[in-house]
Image (cartoon, rainbow, N blue to C red; front, side):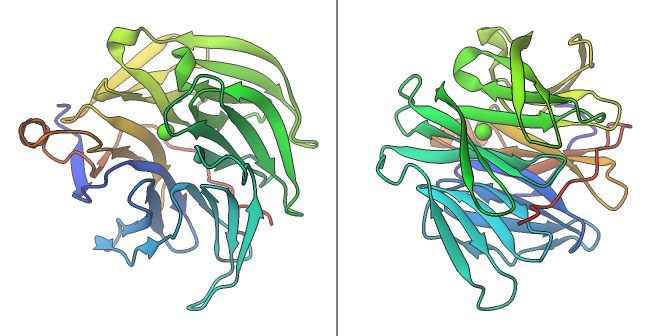
Length: 292
Ligand code: CA
């Protein structure tokens, strides 16, 4: 393991995923998709929770500009108001496809929330990518996705990165912040199967893209030109996603899973399902809340 990597929360999540920094609360949020939980960690005060328990599998979460949260859940998007008894509004997506669920999601530079789906049994091409606009309308961006992951936008706001884990690499698109439209898809980085499956990702302030490797026990940084720049290794294999957080956005938080690991495997992979972090010497981009 990289000796600068620290286990911050031994959350033992089945499928820890989707970290995102919430500047308003000074907390790092992340989900346990199958454990149906939104975790919360305040690194400044080293406080854990309170967690939010969801009644559907929860693929991703993001803070709303107006307070509250937006969630990508099995069956749609859920918009929650702030407060102890928050309003809940479910916007159905793929409601007639119980074999599918929402997976990774993130806000674009204009505050639209993007999230994609996958089949529980990972049927190739069964998922799609969706965009939830601030007026709560849903657009199907494209179909034929196997495991939707790895959203991110370049610092200049002109490029969107996207990973369909089923394709073994990271793609990029030309992106228009004014309209939210994307075009000109191209393969940006290929990742060999022996190195792991590309999962969640985040973009740093210098345009580097950090890619979590499911089964690969690492997070890799790719420079803007697509060259492999750095590798951060972890003590467990199922590394799912990463995001910068902390008041200075200088700490890279990394989520992991314990999904399917046997007792002996868990003993060999201390902290599997936990939240890790490292200070890589580069900062993240300020996270954008959902504008709806
Ligand atoms: Ca993922």
